[in-house]
Length: 204
Image 1 (cartoon, rainbow, N blue to C red):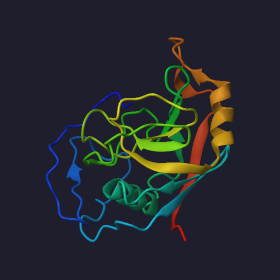
Image 2: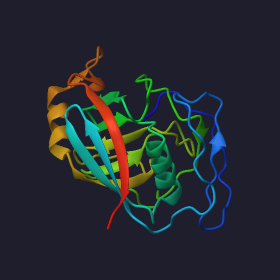
Image 3: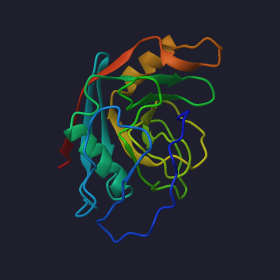
């Protein structure tokens, strides 16, 4: 789901409420601080609202299942990392996903750190799933994908959210197809998607 994997690491056992974020060999696509590593929220669900040029997309974060993943995404959103960034990859053949979270729009950009996978035991990717893109085990960064139709993937991508609004937006983008030269249905969306803002709020 990401063409150039950063350096992988073996995840260490950490006490509850703690996360590890390792600096990667590649610089951050946008300057950001590392997310908090202690006192990490373990239960409180949150809602992420992506305001895009195609409409609003919202998803709930599954904090309990993926606390370090959701902690990272909340941190990046608070630092406006996702603001004014494209969703750079649309796949319409084999899998049905729109990939976002790289400010460079190349598929190679990240936040300058990596962290371990979570919530992979029995992981599946039905319509409405939000999951992390990666370049191999424990190489998560900032890129994530939105599943707009039931998709078969190996349980290798941390699922951490569920779309509650905007599936119609994703379906409209998917219907327009991807601008790929190989004809494989994997490239930049013809109907360009630009995230204007990404806001996170606690879910009541």
